[in-house]
Length: 194
Image (tube, rainbow, N blue to C red):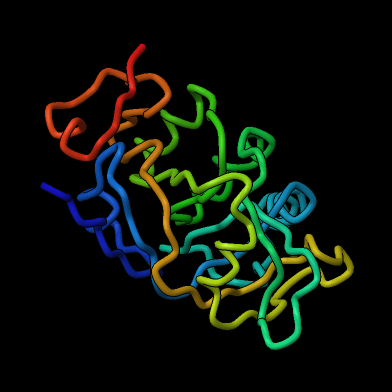
């Protein structure tokens, strides 16, 4: 029996975030934002100075990526995920302002698991090495902040069926910490084990 991915829309409501469980396969449609290290540092600085942010964080999803130049006729270049742990020092600040989800790759710290639980947010994993494929899920893109950062500027992306897996859910359950198979994993063809 094939289990269909969960379809979610971004902005991501707290209720929807809380309905997701670690290992759920999801397809995200709607608006997401990009931000990497330098943009995160600037956002935290604005938060600490109590200045307005250049885009809303409430119920939004940030994708940790920076594109290559877009091919002719495409709105965005190849855009694979970057290592999420590099954003760990900034993440609690953004979560405190309502950020509901993040997309990246790799493990997060225990402090981030606790922050996700506290703020009822989700960490999604997407596929490293698949930047060209992932860019095909992007229908429109525009720079909304920090254009001086070049490819690491903050982009607003309109995505359709962007694939991800819930890596850490709102209960703090972590895919990397819980690699024991569930009963329905065999039906999905998964063979994860410790």
